[in-house]
Amino acid sequence: MTWNTPDDRKYAETDEWIILTGDSATLGLTDYAQDQLSDIVYVELPVSGETFEQGDIVATVESVKAAADVHMPMSGAVTEANSAIEDEPEKVNADPYGEAWFIKLTPADPAEIDSLMDADAYARHCAARDD
Image (cartoon, rainbow, N blue to C red; front, side, top):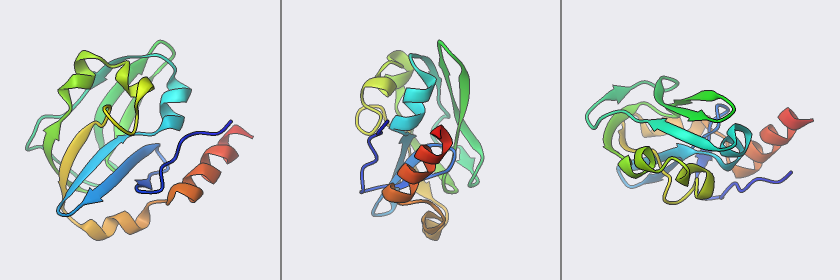
């Protein structure tokens, strides 16, 4: 199976994507993750102002099959949470790289992004798990 992995962002082994835009970053759940979870029915997000370290649990997603934690790919402070996906969690399945972003944040250490995978490495990571 092939999953969408846009080249303009970085990926964590725990199936989050992040994209840096100037001094801000946007985080979401990957296409692979939403596919594995199946129909997402609930999303719980943090509030603006909360700070997290790289690897911390920042959100929770529940589907008809399972619950999953969403981890911070980089340390930072939440500047905005996407309340639209709390109201309509199915958007995560429909548009994981667009409307269904989870949070916007101010990175504490932008260099942490260098520890994440590019699109090709993440695609190989997903394929290896499905073998």
